Image (cartoon, rainbow, N blue to C red; front, side):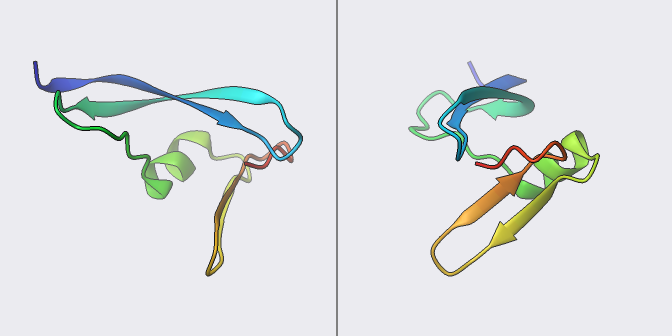
Length: 68
């Protein structure tokens, strides 16, 4: 069933820890991926969070120095 709800991403930090990111997202039954918008990430996390884009990577940084 298509709809919206909380979508969870398990990500590994640069320090090797696993954390969960829970954000409102859309459920599309046949989709094989879950997309996380950097704009949504920044608006929900706030507190000094930032996104750094390089030609090879997209680095998400929480305000508490956690990077992934």
